[in-house]
Image 1 (cartoon, rainbow, N blue to C red):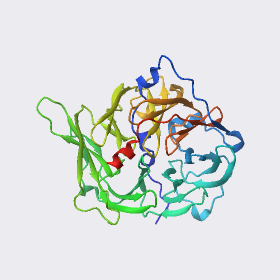
Image 2 (image 1 turned 180 degrees about the vertical axis):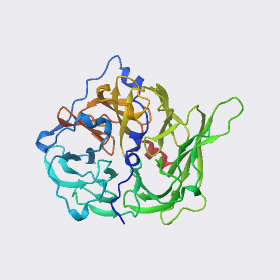
Image 3 (image 1 turned 135 degrees about the vertical axis):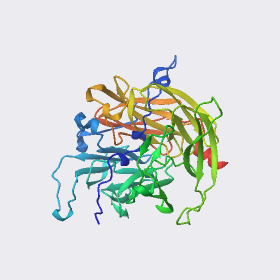
Image 4 (image 1 turned 90 degrees about the vertical axis):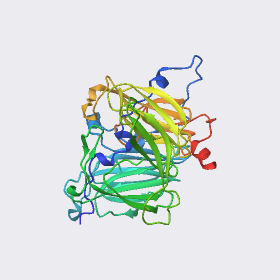
Length: 434
């Protein structure tokens, strides 16, 4: 069996890249009358001595994943990037469709800028390859095999799935890891997914879903689902969006509910029925998106229609946290989260005009990549910076676990900022205390 079968290109992209969300218009355009002095980097680490070469903008529309930036702890960074070097190929280990690239991984000391540890990994494609698990640990994908590592940069085997990987993600609070693998099935045995008008959205498939505790990679449960999809994992379960039959003349009605799997750590399979908690019912003419901002806050709203639209953040009690109009000309989004739920960072490519579809992008239309750091409970914009080099996949910025430090690639260096204290209690801590 081919242990390195290439997974589908689209399904391994980060969920925030796939969602057609946009950067807030009000937050970026409105400035206070008496703005405080601009934040300056507390530390900078030059990129050239590391051997880093900016990726060509020619590949921007293809959305390759060739660099990542993450905090290991408050004082150390893990920076990975593609290097141009000869690749040692093993004739007995070459699979059809391989597009090998060499990734250099550096552990950086923020105070000195020194490289404390370095390693090189050969990846077999240009798709997403690294996910932070929290507490200085990371998940690494090499082909169809999964490994875990830490500041030692030693790749420890974790999973060797028998079937192709279709989706991987870690919850915003770094509490859960979920892995989806495709299972060959007879399409005639499953009905296709359809929208409210009866149009076919996606052909059926069998997918195995496995949910793990991110801290120790212990299996929480397995389940069979009809298709690969991004599971919005929250504090004690995952969110589900359902269409509800509305009253006459009230348009489409939607229900957000949480399917809870807390307490299933010792069970190998899902029980016949999981406890369900209804969160919020609301009207919408489109099928809303669900984007977790933390373990207890989610962003919802219409997206992908090429127009400015309203986005609303709510907590797991159904309380509206904040609401903002977002511009449609910001596309191809990446996100970073503070593990304690206090803040999130959102990066978007700014274009000359709104794009209805991701494949409409033209390199000349992209002007810059803007990254904003937001307080989760208020939506308040804490910091805005342009990232360079621009990337449409991967990650060129990072937030520390407590939301007090922010790092970004710009001005031919990694800039690290000390952010002001957040007066609002982190949503994760508030929900957990109740």
